[in-house]
Image (tube, rainbow, N blue to C red; front, side):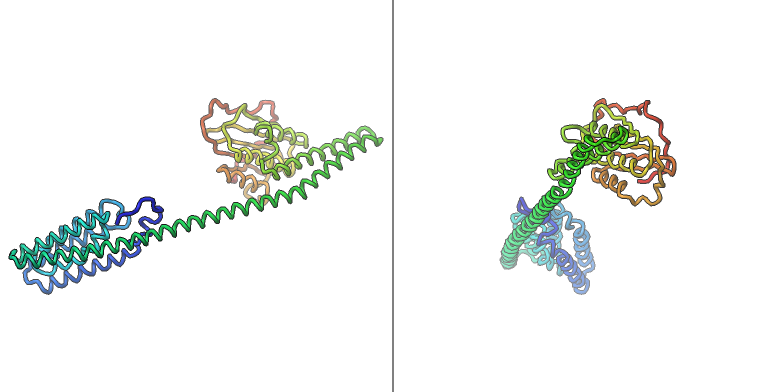
Length: 431
């Protein structure tokens, strides 16, 4: 049957009312063919007529599954089957026997596989005319036969048309209801998504309040206490070396507290890492290397002059990964030197962090949170993490992030020749 434009795609053809009952139409069709074949075999004395009738029905049965499949209902094939059905039933009307019984199977199939109501009317009229002509030829065409056969054809056309149009109307109403249900389901899904977004925003606001009332307040207190300690230190008489050491440690505490206070405020505002506020990724990475050097591990970095276009999520992931990698070097590697390198390689941006520390076995227990956090961040943007390390031979983290666009002349920088050579890590890798 025809389909009203604008229906939800998922309704057609899978959820069409015709489709739900298709298997029973198939069973009924082949059952009717089997019955007619048995009647012809048992009741037709002429073997030629019997073989011709069975052959015509075999042709129809063979073509049926190839022209009426569900996936073909919106193509030309169902219409081709309707034409074949009219030809076969009309041909059988010229032969004596029970082949004309298929007319009562043909009527519902015509309405099932016609492309429109007009097509169903035309096909119904055509098959009625074909059967009537066959019967007139077979019975001699007398006036009495002409009246009876014409009346029979007219009544058949009228009954088939009334039934077909009535069913057509019911099907259209049913599919309108199905469309309405589909729209309601889509609205329900969208409402659920809106509720989820609203819940996420509410949770986000709650976390912002918690961070503001706990971490931010705590870091503010640390900043105030460190400043007070520095002020008191200036009025206290200590030897110069002790005073310098205490002052340096208090300054480091103050700087760390201020940095983390900025992070807490950035989380509250949900505007991304504070290192990227008012600056760029290259500057933030350079500041990370300088901070790592100040913490006791001599850290150099090699950065390009410019970067390919990066999304905010990619910049955040690269910055956080570099930050976590250098934190691991400071906390766990016992390294004296480390190097941070960023370069473009084909369709990837490679961030490499190398150290000359104690190293570890990548295939052993690496259940720490640091590497998992880096891997998770990179996975969110389609990146990868490769770890090369061995006990006593340092560690290399290679972080690859896919980028789009051309190089635009972006050079792949050579390693800084002034950077002290680090221990080469073992070739073992773990992702």
